[in-house]
Image (cartoon, rainbow, N blue to C red; front, side, top):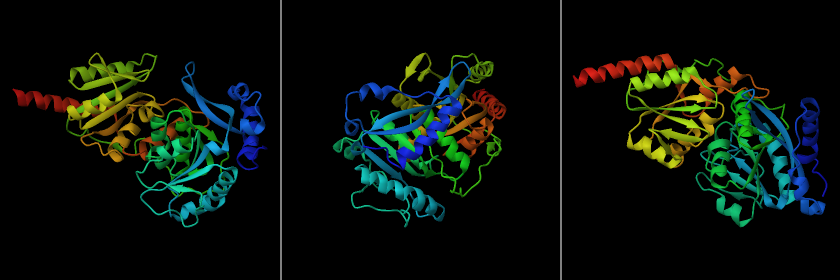
Length: 390
């Protein structure tokens, strides 16, 4: 079996350039696993990148890796290739050749559209299978012993991430799968939305098969002011603050805790992926129950890091959005990012301020507010409550 001239051959040169220029590491995990196997048994060689967190610099660095996949146990997943004119070029020049390539290799092709009709230029093959809207593909993956998923579609920052058959949900339901994104086959409303979402995915062990399509045009421009959508007042109602902490002491977070205690506002802390509230560990299901039982209307996020944990974790905004939008869980609060208290971890090749602006202004369901505005308004609410009691 020779490397495919599309996925495997062309991405080799991208990988090789990165390896030489950046001195990136190469994953050898499959060398031992495939020793003694024929080339057919070992599968196709692919190259991809993920990001690793460096605790010394508090930043993410790209790591370039290689692995082998068996095409017959792999699937190309197409998320929301909609009937929009700005998706025509992506569909015709990039996605359709990928469909032909994966189909010729014996891989499955899974169409997962929702909400809108599929692009009229999209190649629909007879061997392909459709899963519409909320219909999940888990049973199909089990039946065909699928081990590897390769994602393409629109929008990388939204649907490809969070739809029922999108990456976040599939990783939660089927953690044994290896998941990749074909960079040439995805698009977002803005260039920075695509870049920020690919960076987020790499931080969460989703391999990015790099080969950027330079001929693609983005239909919108990123709002670059991080305060463009900042709220000027806090919303009334029950509040809960969730603080993501790392190993470093942060005086601003500690001061915020003291103020919240004084104003009798409930807060929890997340350390190493575990949420603690009132001296006890709160599991993700219990967290959802807590928010509903306490009738929390406003959920505020702060800490480390906005460009990963505050979005992706079990207690993050993405999980909350999935519960509300796709699982129809009632009685959940609206998420707010405390703008000046939401820290960013520098990401390879991305401007940190532009990445923050992209998340605050373009991520689903997010509002943001400054700590000064929030604390001032909480103080007013606290005083009004005391006056009412007296």
